[in-house]
Image 1 (cartoon, rainbow, N blue to C red):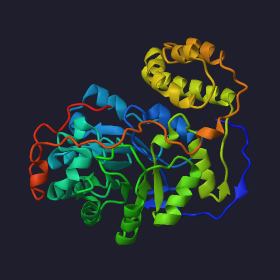
Image 2 (image 1 turned 90 degrees about the vertical axis):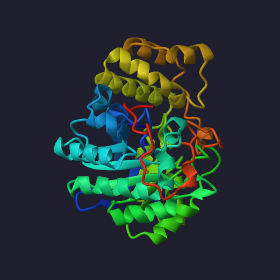
Image 3 (image 1 turned 30 degrees about the horizontal axis):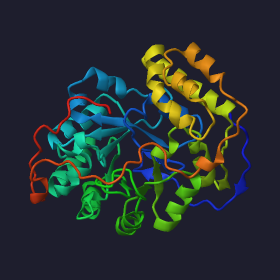
Image 4 (image 1 turned 180 degrees about the vertical axis):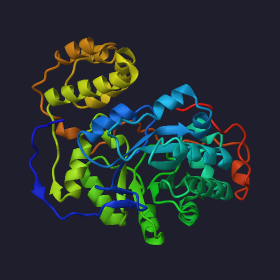
Length: 387
């Protein structure tokens, strides 16, 4: 998608392309974090229209995949020109995760599998999954090892994790070392514990610690709101690349800024509301191609507030945009905006999406009492995928 030409300045490149084994090169070393309900095939395609990188699918549940749940099978769709195809898998049972990875390989469903050990939401952690699972370090080891063995060298396996359950139960160091020993291609670390959820400021110190400790690439995640934040993270931590999550909500053009800065050009797209409206319609249009027009436009509703953040838009028009149910209706409403407004620069660098902070982590009973247990938590293998 064409945007207003930004002013660019030459700067020193801060990184090298990211290698996932000998099969995949990610240049620039930028990864779109899996976001439930967001990083579907339509949003990934939109982001790719602005910049390059590795764009990971929404979290796919291993059990739902092997049972061929219809909703899950729709979620694993990739665009014909999408390469590499990157899928994130969630699971708690090494055998089921192994079966899921073997299915990915046998059915040629993806080129890369990322394992989720970072999700902090209660419906996942209360079953011992996501960010809770690495506390059971031997179960974590079994699961990662099973996934790598199931891949059988046919595709790279990576791991995304958080610092730990809470400040008293950190897991990132032990888990990263076990993951490296199991043969993963990289470890991505979000600089928050599960208890911190999405509040406060991400701690980049442990990212620097892992970058020094491991022989495989370490990617940093947390508070990448602008391209300048990515540069600062790499320079401060020595990580090999960055993972971008909430920073791109309502701003898919952020990947253009990231591609530029990693190529040695400093730039910031500041699209006026006219260009933002075009991006909004394009996003809804792509969702319509994937889900059908009505479902696609309904799914787009959640994105409206993110795109319009900082712009002057009346409450009635905002409400109407968030209730649109067809592309013609959405187009008509978008043309009612004051499209002459410039981009609100005062929102740059500010958090987007979820900002809720510290909370007690929901965990299975006595989960923290036995770190060495290899027992698979009861009921943790979710039967379907999605947020």
